[in-house]
Amino acid sequence: MKGALYPGSFDPITSGHVDIARRGAALFDRLVVGVYDTPSKNLLFDTTTRVALAREALAPFSNVEVQPYQGLTVEFAHNLGVAAILRGLRAVSDFEIEMQMAHQHRAIRPDVEVVCLFTSPNFSFLSASLIKEVARLGGDVAGLVPDNVAKALRARFADAPQNDNVPRFLNT
Ligand code: ADP
Image (tube, rainbow, N blue to C red; front, side, top):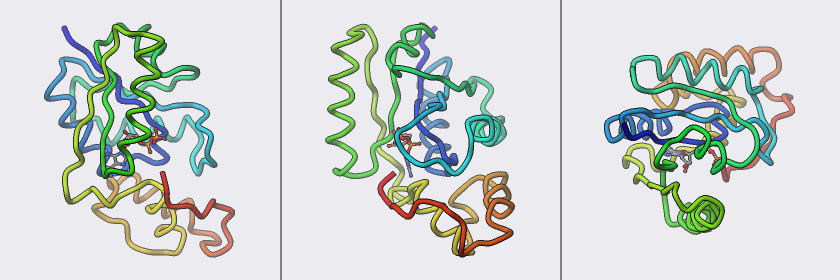
C-alpha cells in the first residue's frame, strides 16, 4: 500500500488544495494531509481550526485523512511510513522553493520521494493569502474555497472587516 503526505499551512484550505488532494488520493492508496503547526507566517486560523476545516472539506475522499504535525515535514512523512511527499506547483515562482525543499528532504531522508502535481489552470492564480485579503475586504470567495471555509471566513471577518489585524501579503 503506497501512501503520501500532502503537507502545508492550509490557512485556510482552498479549492486549489482540495484539487491537489483529490488528484493525489487517486494516485496513492492513502493520503495524509499534514497541517503544519507553526509555519513562519502569520496565521489567521489556529491549528485546531485549520485541521477541522480541512477534515470537513476532504470528508468526501475516503482514503484521505488530516493530521496536524510539528517539526520536520520529511521526518513526519518517514514516521507515517509513506512513500512520498506531495506538493502542488502553481507557477515557475513555486518551482524554485519546491526544488530547494525537495533536495533538503532528500538529504535527510532519501527514501521519501517528492511528487509535484501541476495545479489545475482554474486554480493556478489562487493562494490562501489572496483569499484572506479578499474575504477581509468583504469580497465573495465562493468557489475559490470549500463552502465550510467560506462560512468560517465570513464569521471571522463579520465584526470589523476593515480593521482586522490580518497580514497583508500575497505570496503564500
Ligand atoms: P505552504 O505554507 O507549505 O506553502 P500552503 O498551504 O500554502 O502551504 O500550500 C500547501 C501546498 O499546496 C503547496 O504545495 C502549495 O504549492 C500548494 N498549493 C497552494 N495553493 C494552491 C493552489 N491554488 N492550487 C494547487 N496547489 C496549491
